[in-house]
Length: 272
Image (cartoon, rainbow, N blue to C red; front, side, top):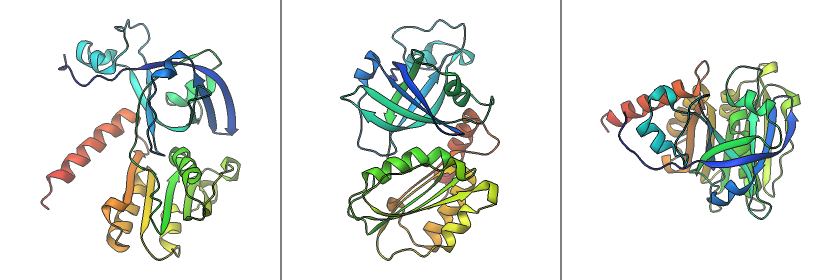
């Protein structure tokens, strides 16, 4: 068995309603008594771990991932998937998550497609690391569908008149969403169905002068390319760049987390 680790209590919510935002994006609004324990943070990339128990396993109560991982064999550990909090309304008692759904493959997408009011939603968190710095001269937001909820929340949080350049890669025009902001924002939608190149679009863009605060998240391949470009060619300081691969093509969430941890350890082991 694993050694006892940090407590990771799970909140039990109930689905209140569901909305089909686009052909492949499903919005789930959840609430209930379990939401009272939710502690919002200041980040626009605030994220939660949606928890999927293994069928037939009796879990100890209260449901705590730290306790479960310490006391139960690995094959009985619940699976988790990470999702950005699209919106949280404490007064209304509602938490909103947007799920990408591409058919019956995967775990969270099919769950969202089949969810109905009253269904249980288990989650842990939130975490987070990024919020737009109002002192920045301009802001760069780059991502795919997985980062779109955080990009949308960041645009809503931008101060009036802030200079923003956003690049969002989606399947096609039918997946575009209406985004609200008080900022002076240029949002460019790129479409896989048309062969659009997200990295090329960012590299070819003319950006404002001055201090940039950047958020770049999504599929690990383009994230790696843009990390090199922004750090090495553009001279963006590391502390002005929030950048991470949310997922990797051809890998499920568990496989990608293992690869990501190994890559991080290798990076930390390299000589300065």
